[in-house]
Length: 370
Ligand SMILES: Nc1ncnc2c1ncn2[C@@H]1O[C@H](COP(=O)(O)OP(=O)(O)O)[C@@H](O)[C@H]1O
Ligand SMILES: [Mg+2]
Image 1 (cartoon, rainbow, N blue to C red):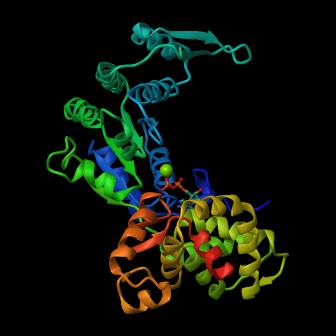
Image 2 (image 1 turned 180 degrees about the vertical axis):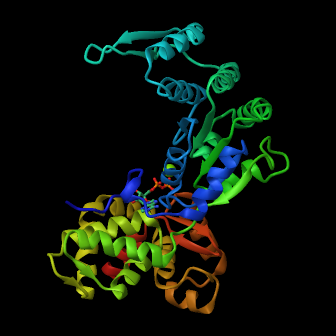
Image 3 (image 1 turned 90 degrees about the vertical axis):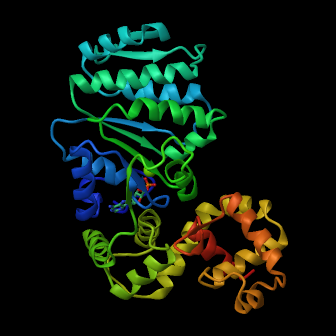
């Protein structure tokens, strides 16, 4: 069985240890400190949170995923759903049912397990006031049994039409929950910045920042080697270094690429660069529809800009080198193209450089030699 896992939360043996981050996050949570956990997509934020909370004693985990929320109604439903899944005990569900009764949930008994569960009528629409009530409910729950509350992909709260009011309501309540640790995790740095570092935002300086970066090279290299060894494949360090580079050091993308290498190899030594091409081709074939969708969205000029980016390190877009490689002469045209590519989420800016959101799209462009 392929030992490389991606696109899911990883834990236990699939989680390459991050002792320092785990220790910091544990101690913030234990002391009731609010944390802003930031890092790129697929870098391992959610896995780190789960792995950390799992090792803490006597604390319950309220996990609310805000990915792609669009309305206040979505937000309330996600909070309620998380509250419901907090405990699977019958007494708990019944009490929750009472607390939420004015939202008219319906309680049913699972015929197989005999345990009660709650569901919410789609016809009920939640309003901004409901948020206050729900946050109060979180507080009450925490008084019974200590809670850690995680809002994952928190930047998506900015999707709401009423984002500033919602943030203000949340903040005004949360600031009185001094013994509940809240973790706000987010992957889009400039949007998280907007929430936590702009003086006029309600959440200004309200949490301590913890950054999740790439895994340490030597530790992750060993982790990968051992995974290959499970299937009697011996991979060289040189090849691993190449894999890390191609995947831009993002753990999720590295695991995807290693998984593909696994699929195109047999039980033996792996030390041939052609293996990487074969693995990439496998990924290309699976992701081709996505690349074609990107290509449909971009103009010729934007494509040239992307190719320039793929062929350089993405740090100096207005250098003579970049102008030569991309063939775009006007810096203002480069700026326009890159802004658009950033807006449609094909590239993003981080650590002083522009990067591809999907590193395999970059490899594909180079492979196609456009
Ligand atoms: N500590 C880790 N060890 C090994 N792989 C990891 C680790 N953290 C993340 N990954 C890889 O990254 C993928 C995405 O992880 P996830 O925690 O969902 O990231 P994020 O929440 O930052 O988007 C996982 O499916 C896994 O392949
Ligand atoms: Mg996540």
